[in-house]
Length: 220
Image 1 (cartoon, one colour):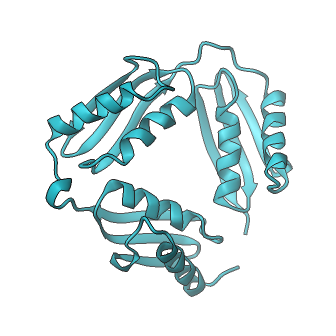
Image 2 (cartoon, rainbow, N blue to C red):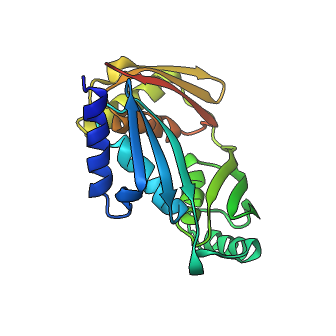
């Protein structure tokens, strides 16, 4: 297990390695596997990339963010301009049903709401907005209301195991799956954020799922 100092150095190195991040302006603290990022970034996209970079580092069990988005120059836009751009981008996102997403912007912070059938559609909406100029944050309040019935817990578990095997990632038997109506709860342990992401994505990819509760923890 890494010491706090080793984990801090590894996260700092990964931030320097990430070209979408100005690592010199980001401070890193580590304590018992919990990493805190602090500082100032030029865009919400940079903040997002910094967080993802930190999560890639082995040994990071949890993360808190104190990064502030500070827009300068041409990056500053009115809420009306941002709202119009977001609506146009969502309209041109092929995976989204027309008119499914509603948009509200306040102080550069974009709130998305509405209903879609699948998690990948909700993710596509947030992804398409995150990199837009002037955006200081994204709140995803989109609901998933699938038209298909949920399959059994055994099928969900099998799908997750198959996904982990395909990607040569750890033993899926450490992950437990519970199904309650159209909700899936995942618990157990994994070795990395990638394993956790694959497990949750597999659950979201199951027809009929409305909600995935992620209670997976990291093995020491």
